[in-house]
Image (cartoon, rainbow, N blue to C red):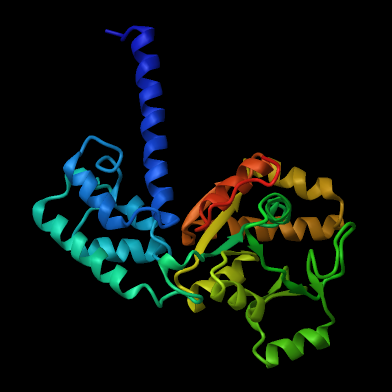
Length: 308
């Protein structure tokens, strides 16, 4: 028999509430409000609660620096299925997981440049395909969340309309970029779309982290991979378009590239989208302010919009 409409509505609302509760648990692990061990113990005590119904893999993915590959390796080593929920772990699985999390917490204080989990700083990398709106989202964060330190990249490309040197980017010559590479001044750098080069100056990022500030890097996917290698505790966020058609519309609509360049960038975007599973979190840029808030929520700060 088909359940009454009121029952289906209630069940749907309950499911949404449960998903939100689990999302809050993961967010609190990301920003350091709760430890993974605390979540596991709470889930074991109340298997039907938000912590207990959370998949172990999702919990591991909430730990800065693990990522999908490391999380899956950890699950394999612990003999825990990726679909296993915290509240359904067997006794030996519980012990192995808690021991592993405790050992990781004990050695994580020096894993990230700029200090450990308790120093209030977090390095977050925002990347995604061309025309997804990375610059728009990062600009919104800079203008509305003053607590966030937004790293300014250097680039060899020419400024676009409205971009300001030293604020949007450091616009440098090829010769100056070569010098910075040779002298090790970049945290990461890459050639994007087979043309212009982009790089993140190392000094300002490290200074901010040393001062206990959280830093947001808005870079390309190649650069994000370099940061993952050099700073494994960084949180990598992949910005997605709502749909492929919307990505095409945004690229064509901004009118800053020729038709040939647009076609080349769209071909690159298809390749870039395949990299999303390498990242710790995915954020859909449907509405700029909502996407910006999600990114800020992943940073270990108590930021609020300046206009609130």
